[in-house]
Image (cartoon, rainbow over all chains, first blue to last red; front, side, top):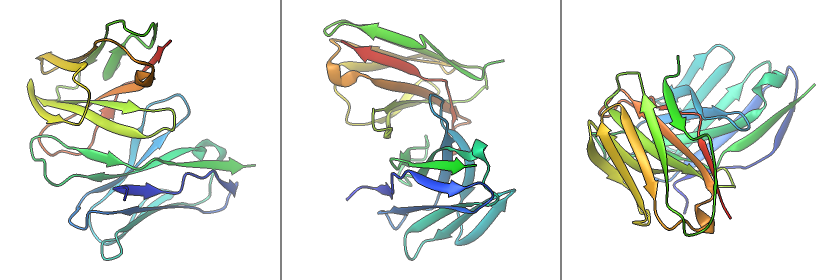
Length: 114
Length: 113
């Protein structure tokens, strides 16, 4: 079983709609969860982090965490063409304290169509 | 002002060669990382150093050897390159310890022929 699983997509969403990206993880002790965005040919950049059950909102982005179901999601409201990218779900391995070992999913490719 | 920089940006080489990739960060961070992203975009950690000490050493062939001369630099040397080493290699840094926010370099695209 993969540690962090995502649907690879592509997920195609019309401009202005809500894009919903989903992720599940296998280690139920995990405490820290992240969403990274990666444009084609570029490096990943952190867009959201979430640590507690429930929703966390930042602008058009909302991260949702359900530890009982081992499920993390990212909602993008009012989707823009500039949101077209690969979104990587990531989970921190709790066993390390001197460094931050992040385990990434394989990413979901999101395409916003005008 | 580049926060995390890598050289070279592109590297094309023959099987069996030895090559190095350099990484430097000017953020004052204590922890640096090397990641490999394969053709399917799967991003996987290889190594991490905290203030020049090796902390994370994943299951990576021993042909790969990281070196950290100081906390601002983390280089990656690869011996006897193989076709399967073709990937994008990203360097990253974070403040230190368990601080999770990692800042990635632009990547080095390695192609082994």
